[in-house]
Amino acid sequence: MNDPHSNILTTAPVGENDTKMRVDKWLSVCTNLSRSRISALIEQGVVFVNDQQLRDQDKKTQLGEIYRIEMPKPVEAKPKAQEIPLDIIYEDNDLLVINKPAGMVVHPAAGNHDGTLVNALLAHCKESLSGIGGVARPGIVHRLDKETSGLMVIAKNDEAHKRLSAQFAVHSLERCYLALVWGSLKPLNGRIENQIGRSPVNRKKMAVVKSGGKRAETHYRTVEIYANGSFSLVECSLKTGRTHQVRVHMTALGHPLIGDKTYGKIPAGVRKNTLLQKAVDFPRQALHSYKMSFEHPIANRIMRFEIPLPADMQSVIDSMK
Image 1 (cartoon, rainbow, N blue to C red):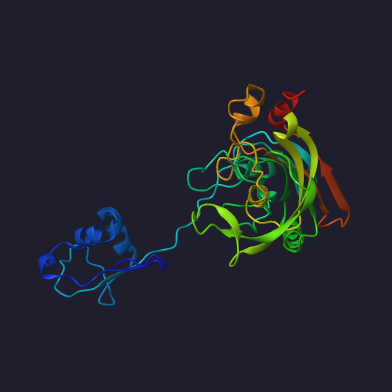
Image 2 (tube, rainbow, N blue to C red; image 1 turned 45 degrees about the horizontal axis):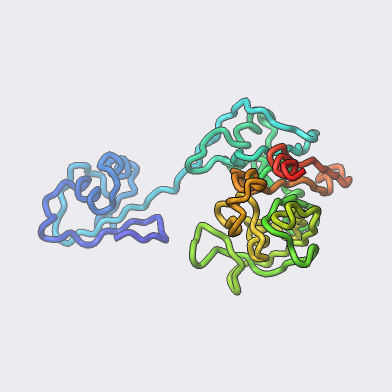
């Protein structure tokens, strides 16, 4: 029997029908691990029979024996440096500020082991990148979703990383996003505050929850309304930094982001409107981190950055003009 909350796998006692089997074969059936993987674990000394370390690869099972495998923790693979162009807005000895393009993953994970921002940073910064984020996340102080574009700050040394992380922890820095949302908000400007946590219906999504979440606060301001209220450009200022905060909050207000396949839903009647075709067909969530300010972690001066909308979001707006 495997405990899903533990890295220890423990079998049921060997039954009469399973005696005198090669132990690697029997354990393979019990655990769904390959026989070669079982053999390697035996060699590592992490397989036990009746609490005694098992060393004999050829051992046969005996009635009533209980086997335990203490699975070693997975070791993060060290990402490789890759020469990937970066849109660098600012750089000094302690940090750099970049404009992350939509479609770029921030750090390696299952399914995205290379081509990430971290791979690009390792090539650009060489050995100077802060290691506080761990093997797979050097220099990363905060993150943007894969399909979200815009400003990110990267720490180039450990001291800068610690001080920038402290600012994110207390929300003392400014982070503003521009989003294209369906419809027009009422009121046009306002504040939404609640708790965001894992959705009880779909654990891969975040949601506004009544309990068990973390406080989330977003201030929003309507910048412009298009096509008689079919969609709007909205500025969202984050007072907290929760996963998918803008996307969840706009959806909670009834105005999901254009292109958001996880939280969004195209309003009835819009899909057939040829004037709105660019908005309907937009391939990502229309979200851009356009403004950021923080205190330089070493020089102690206020740094402010602002960048325009990316071409894809601007083209949706231009189609209305």
